[in-house]
Amino acid sequence: DAPHIVHPPALMSHSRIRVFLPGTGGQPLDYSCLLRSMADAAAVVPAGPVIGLSYAWLPVSDAGRNQLCSARYANSSAATAACLVAQHEDGLFGGPGLSSEDGTPLWPATLSSDAVAGRLLALLRHLASTSPAG
Image 1 (cartoon, rainbow, N blue to C red):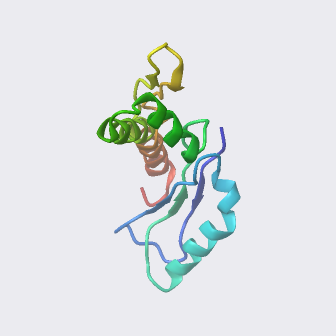
Image 2: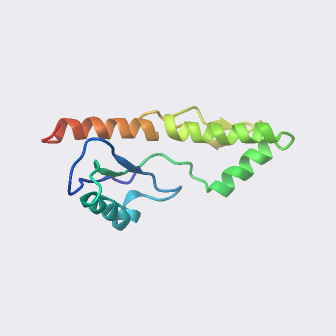
């Protein structure tokens, strides 16, 4: 589990935050220069903090996930698409995961607290309680 990165901007505005989600297998530290540049750009266009968010991601590549869903629902492109949507929803909000017909997990369950929305909410609450500006 990688740490989150939060860069306060040079000129603070509470109008918006910018949240960066690294891709599958990535972590915020892999993008530290990009995140710092985004925060530095706030000197030109005031904005809120830049957040590099760590979250639970599927332990398989996007191509692998496409293959898993295609194999599970080989006779239905609509069901394959729904499978991919379900995985993204699990990653964003938490969910039960999905298993193949023989019970083999296609991807594991994701706790809502480890999903993108849960981690972002927890981080924003933490920042609000520890920031001098509130």
